[in-house]
Length: 187
Image 1 (spheres, rainbow, N blue to C red):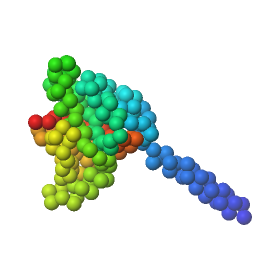
Image 2 (image 1 turned 90 degrees about the vertical axis):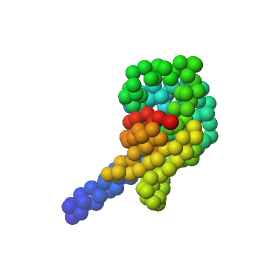
Image 3 (image 1 turned 120 degrees about the horizontal axis):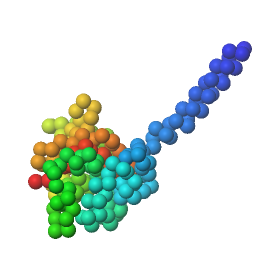
């Protein structure tokens, strides 16, 4: 009889633990050491990520803060600081100069697609295509393609750069962010 009580108590404890763990699993992933809140917009969340300080500085320099705080929805492939560091020396500094604002805007908007494209939706679109690629036109008018390889989502730009999505489905009040490990370069 004591074994039954113990087993029932253990089962109830596991059910309670799983019940409280489930919402935590459904929560947004941490990005750059910061919690991301689906009630905040893209800019409000990005400014808290230690891994996206270069991206945030670039968004501010390009005058895109207001746009990315807008209703959207937007899907943003957000390069990390490390991704920007892989660019040739001096590239970021050159892009951040006021006289290069148009070029910076084009580079940044080449990372943004209209709509709320989760990784699952992107993968579904890729599987439905004849070539295994989900093709998108970015806000800048450039082309991006996405493909699932070995269970990972990869994004291809027109210049041949391939970025791997390292953190997918960071929900925002105005869309979704996918963290990528390369800067996507428009032609």
